[in-house]
Image (tube, rainbow, N blue to C red; front, side, top):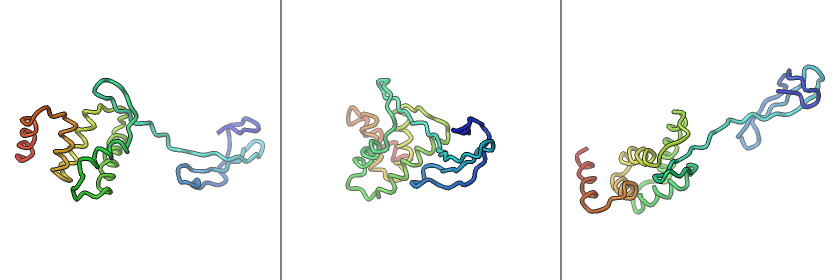
Length: 150
């Protein structure tokens, strides 16, 4: 860290603590050359997750948008909101831990379905009907059959 007063890049950390809203580490530093004290903040750099839509457009991943879809799929089902939040957290963690910054909406939908089928099968079918864009009753029936066979 370069001293703002003299430009020397040697300093020592005098004090270190979390920032007020716990999103960074606040460090008090002292320049070893001139003794000037200054404050720095260290933050984790998070790359935004990008979703590549079916038509090729790119959008930033929005938790709220996915949550709305999950709420629609679980309406009148006994699925707590905390469970859905956990599902989204798991997906986000899986992507970030894998170093993935871009994902197609098709792959994202598949991830959601893999996790949703373990939570509620009716919600799975509801979400799948929108995600897979069932064209007719036959496609819907086929999905029900494959779910029953599992």
